[in-house]
Image: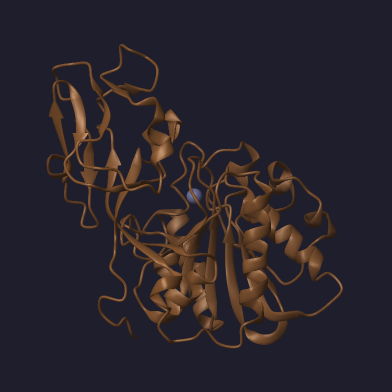
Amino acid sequence: MGSIKLNQIGSYPQELLEINVEELYTLFPEPTLLHLHGKKPEPVFVSVLLHGNESTGFYVIQELLKKYQNSDLPRSISILLANTQAARHRKRSLDGQHDYNRVWPGTIEPKVQEAIVMQEVADEMARRNVFASIDIHNNTGLNPHYACINKLENRFLQLAALFGPTIVYFLSPKGVQSMAFSKFCPAVTLECGKPGNPDGTSHALEYINAVLHIQAISNKPVLSQDIKLFHTVARILVPKDVTFSYTDQSAAILFQRDLYKMNFTEIPADTCFGIVHSNNNARLLALNDSDEELGEKLFYIDKQQIKLRKPMMPAMLTLDEAIIRQDCLCYLMERLPYPETTYTN
Ligand SMILES: [Zn+2]
């Protein structure tokens, strides 16, 4: 992998409005930060393609630029077109690259070149007095659209609730974009369902347009009946030396085929996640926000079945075995009582 450098521009070529995401690298081979001036000066920051195969954000930006092609933006906007090289190959990230959503300030690997580029983006946006930050993603399972936040403060909840009622609060993994920006402005990560789904594009486009029109983000509490707030308890992984499959009977863990339908459904204790086909170390790992391993606390094995100890709600469960290996099997969440305490700055 050659070295990467941040490209900053103040206008864009017309081709950007029509190009396919796979060809975007021909215009912008490097991560590119595009600053466009609007009526209100403090910019909204939008990052897209931190994961190259999650194309919705890019198509949202195309639509947004077309919408304002001949009129003033209500507010300035800065757009990061991130991993165009991975997008070329429809991959989350390329071999040899660090995951672009694990290298933001706060990352466990601050010295790698991707982290140096993202630090530069964060510094530039802090300098520009960024108004709000929106990072757009897709996922592969059957998930509702939802927003994630990394601070339980009213302005963050307000910004998230504008996208929809389902809100997820998390503090791990480290080095994600929204967590870095939460140090200096309200920040959300949007999960817009599967790539290529027009609902995800139109929803995120409406959302960004709404945020561009807001005068100030309210610091009033969100009405509790308007939101469903969850927090992640653990990220569930398969140990590196353990084979798994949804179909191959010879794998050490054979997952339940219909597991993926359980996203954002509270599932009861003793629910079976899969069958263990070996007497070696086949098990699931569960890492909490402090990277403590809670596998034994969340799962038990009974007659070769991996079962859940207590009721939980999964998110991001996927049938895609490459994603399970590269990222995780799922997140397990619990409902967070709201308002249990008053979240204020
Ligand atoms: Zn993503």
